[in-house]
Image 1 (cartoon, helix red, strand yellow):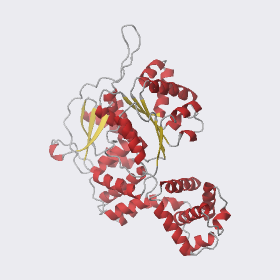
Image 2 (cartoon, rainbow, N blue to C red):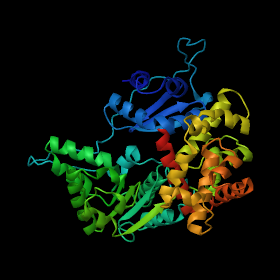
Image 3 (cartoon, rainbow, N blue to C red):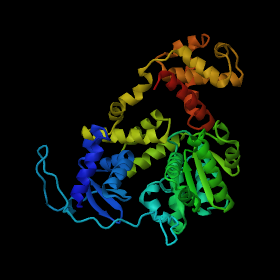
Image 4 (cartoon, rainbow, N blue to C red):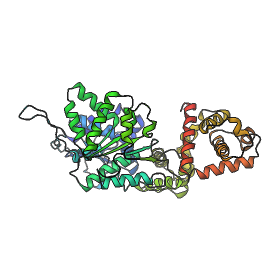
Amino acid sequence: MNLTHIWKTTLSALQSQTSRHDYEALLRPAMLLSLDNGIARIGVSSPIQKEGLENRLLMPLRNALTRVVGYPVQVQVLIANQALRPEVTAAPRNGTHVALEPEPFVTEPPTPAFTSGNGNGERAVQLDLASAMRSGMLNPRYTFASFIVGSSNRLAHAACLAVADNPGQAYNPLFLYGGVGLGKTHLLHAIGNRVLDRDPEINVLYVSSEKFTNDLINAIRRQQTEEFRMRYRNIDVLLIDDIQFIAGKDATQEEFFHTFNTLHSAAKHIVISSDRPPKAILTLEERLRSRFEWGLIVDVQPPDLETRTAILRAKAEQMSVHVPDEVIDFLAHKIQSNIRELEGSLNRVAAYAELNRLPITIDTATAALADLLGNQRRRRISAEAILQIVSEHYGIEVEQLRARNRSRHVVVPRQVAMYLLREETESSLVDIGNLLGGRDHTTVMYGCEKIAEEINTDSHLRSEVMAIRERIQMMRGL
């Protein structure tokens, strides 16, 4: 099977799985440059296209190629050097010629990660995890070097680094929790990559709780539970993502309980991530909850302003795109929820500027993110509803927000309410003052500015404001 045929078949499979924009802008212009030793090298023409493929389509692309060639494939996206391409052209498409690579034959597939059968008729499972991780389970871009450290994630970063340098010793298990898009998965991959860099012979397994569950279901259905147990219990470092999804699944929890015990008693390391701490996973069995609390539990907070700024600068450098400081500052102030959305907004601005041949300015960024920044106000929510959400979050009555009470347990919620009313509604400072007991507009301005400044330095306050905003979005149905 030659490269052209493989790539055409892969594109055909992906066309129905991706949006028209992604297919036309990212997949169709790309080329399969080589496929050797289980590594498919995809050539693209620009850093923007490379970033888009890696961030949005890497997994579908890997899965499609794997199905086409019949063995696991790792995808590597490269910016193709036009000077190295042969002058072979295909028929014109939309008025242009498309360069094609010659068609060498694909090498033999790599040794499978699993083999079965022996002279006694017993099944044996052989795991070459060091290479398996590199070919699909670990993302090579997620390393400690590419992780931006700030006050919101410093403890988590330090704990993960300690585990990677001394697996099986301190902080076992290590339990990371925090909201979506804050870097938990990045840290899990970074641990695996560092462990394998230091010692390729160590067996590392990264897996989501969903995959663990699916593997268990398939093993039961195929009567291969022993192979399943050998796979998950014959490793040195287990990295399991989104553990909250096993809650309420009795068989999965039972199997994971025994897997945990086997690994922990053998001094193997377990690192777990979740969107909440163990005690907040309500339908998690108590025996698992207690084991998760044996080691170190670390909270990953939303990034502060300085960290968001550093993330954007690092991302711009990675994309080889010059983004002026004022645009970085604009995005860092506007996108506060999580790192994934922050990086996505920069990708969007850069792509918008490139496609429309515009300089990257605040006006360009505003236009590129118009629907995103305006999304919060697209479906209106009443000021009274926001006051109710704030009062319920802090456990006080709405009337206390309107009263003249100046005790701290009321002043902070009142200032948060001022800030959110200003951010989430079209209310003026005077309107907000009237709503909160007839307060002067300068008092409202002070409260808004105080909260806007403190959420960039106070991780606890930032988390509270984010939690309230999530409830507001849920009420909007967004």
